[in-house]
Amino acid sequence: MSFQDSGRSEKPAEEQDDTVESSELRAVYRRRLDERARARERWSLWDRRVADARLIALVGAVIAAVLAYRNGGSASWWLALSGGVFLLLVVSHEPISRAGERARRAVDFYAKGLARLDERWAGTGVGGSEFLDVDHPYAADLDLFGTGSMFERLCTARTRAGEAALASWLLAPASPDVIGQRHAAIVELRPRLDLREDLELLGAEVRAGIDPAALAAWCAVPRAFGGRVLPIAAAVLAVLGTAALTGWLFFEVSALPLLIILVIDGCFALSLSRRVRRVLAAVDRRTHDLVLLSELLGRLEREPFEAPLLQSLRAALETGGLPASARIRRLARLLHLLDTRKNQLFVPLAALWLWTTQIAMRIDAWRGGTGPEVAHWIEAIGAFEALSALAAYAAENPADPFPELDRETTCYVAEAVGHPLIPVGDCVRNDIRLGPSARVLIVSGSNMSGKSTLLRTVGINAVLAFAGAPVRAARLRLSMLSLGATLRIQDSLQAGRSRFYAEITRVRQLVDRAQGPLPLLFLFDELFHGTNSHDRCVGAEAVVRGLIDRGALGLVTTHDLALAEIADRLAPAVANVHFEDRLVDGTMLFDYRMRPGVVQHSNALALMRAIGLDV
Image 1 (tube, rainbow, N blue to C red):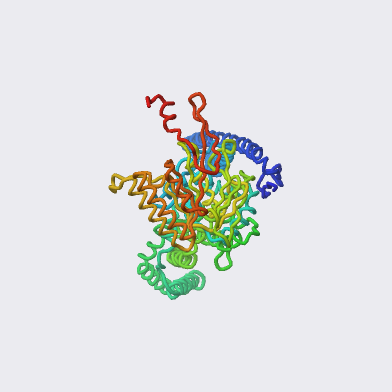
Image 2: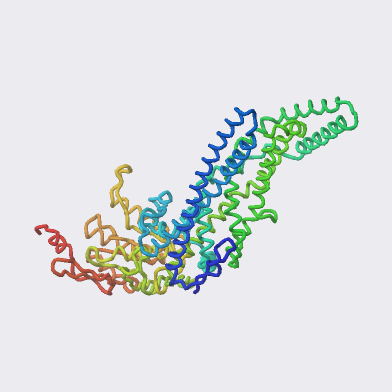
């Protein structure tokens, strides 16, 4: 697959039609990082120069003012010139500062990309801990959120909506049709580095400037001016006032009609003043939010898309045939018209025309007609960002394929499956086959041999598959499954729960899930190890047998070799596999390769002796 920038006129000429192989993505990141760093230095230099020039102009304006005062105004033109230059430099500072800040963010964007490629990303991104629910059937068990989590590795979203969308995709499986649509969208977005960079830069500004909940709440407030009677009445009064003013000024008509209209205008405006204030109270802040949002919306509206999911998301950015950014520009024009009331020369006409009242009515109408769509726009932006994050992951891991969804057989069949959070050079891969014949694997082995990592590997790749992302495997074929795990079960002093009680509660939750519409994929780590061997074996066999009867698939790890005997009684639906270790010169060595059968020894005593315990 080729890796191609989307090619936009505002990019430097040397970046147009920039096409490289995915394997050369590191070189692209490095080159662009250097270019953005140089741009940041240039803008920083311009910023310092403008600041110095502004100070000089200010000093010149002060000197010119003193000379004009002492010389009776003869130096006024110097004052006007220096003052004009000062104002020009003040106005020019904002775009220069903004360009420098965008260059800094671009540097950060590519530096993070290189960190991901170099496996140095942990702790540098967004962990998404706010999305973690400890009662979720697998979120904590599979390290979905937090420092070094799957969410941190995937998330390049810069808006809260994008983070929320990505988190929701990891927490619940999509339907097969949606997964297929996401695959097509990711394939299309995978080479579009320009778009990902722009989403980073514009999304960062939106995140810094917008409270989505407050913006959506403002847009959802019921209209203050319902119906068309009041706007029509205001327009009629404005026309009558204009006619009365024209007659008085140019046709020698008495001023009485004009005075009557002004009195009526005053009464009309006063009667609506509370509603006008309510409409305008938060409009300045919310409009600032919407202007920021319009830049991000405009960028997405300009991008050509062919994948059905991307086209449907862009269609969500249109209301009544107009793109969202155009509708926001309409509101911005209304605010610009509202600001004209601050011109002292315009105040008399503003009063005659009920300017503030009419503009407030139009803003209220905009909010009533377009406001409810703002939440949909933000949701679409979130979906775009989530897809872009998965596309970036796909581009940075070109060897990871999309999974195959089996709609006929309940299965999880993986060739050379590995954990995506383990560096590629350190990741030992194994084959997993769960299906109609062997539905459950009992995984035995010594401490640190790789049992729990195997469970996390199976689980996290299922999460990626059901989110629509590539998976860390040579090949993965699986059916739609409901996922649950017991890898991070903990006791709770506050709730008065022991670790064992917390575990059996989770197991009961997963047994209930197995009765749902999707077969269960369960991952039990050291099942019931908080009780004695007899009770553990009886309870584990009963749970596994019941889950098999409900069509579930799963893995169960254990140190208790007696638990491995379950496979003898439930064969061929249950099979034993194990991990081995070797003690060499007092050091435990592991190859993390899964083998058939039951492990034949334990390393617990050897580990105790290796750290100096006299056992």
